[in-house]
Image 1 (cartoon, rainbow, N blue to C red):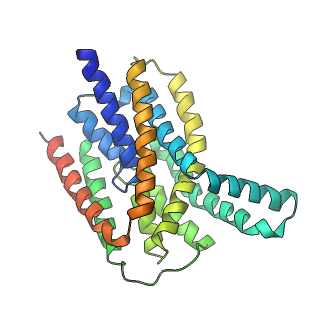
Image 2 (image 1 turned 60 degrees about the vertical axis):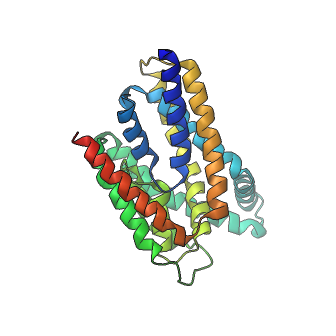
Length: 269
């Protein structure tokens, strides 16, 4: 019975990772909050975090498989075969690379010094909520059609703060795009594709860290958590592209404020 409850905890954490990685409500914040409620120490779950993040990564890669294939093929044909018709694909890839440079640099130098307690996460969630409520006000503006190099750099500057636990990556990139009057779904596509780009080196480092730690592994629990992370990430990204609108951000903003305040209260309990 005890082993069953342990497996159930991993399943729930996998579901939470899958949903919150996609929606603008912070996966790191929710995992820390629920690990506290489940009395699980995340610092001893390096392998678990690596495989659940891998589940989200593979789900997004599957969802955007045609986009990724087109961008890779187009960039190759433009560079190698000098096919001018594929220049737009090459330029889009350049914009993605520009957008991930800030978070790559910031994460590399500061990831080991970032606070990861419920108090700091609570305040970060509150910041995420306030940002979403701020850009919610832009629901009636006229949107720009394309993402420029300047837009990509600014989105990247916003995305840099997503390394802070409790700051939602999708939420902060939405903010970076919407303050520039970019259409929401184009910002989301750009955000998730940039996540795929930056996840490749992060996953390699994660695998390296995972093979160099001593961790008790619940094989069945970890496998089920990976499956849940993949499934719910896929369902969430399908949902968000079908239903998300700027006017709906008020609900995510309010939710982040509530969860942020709850995290701070639990910290002092």
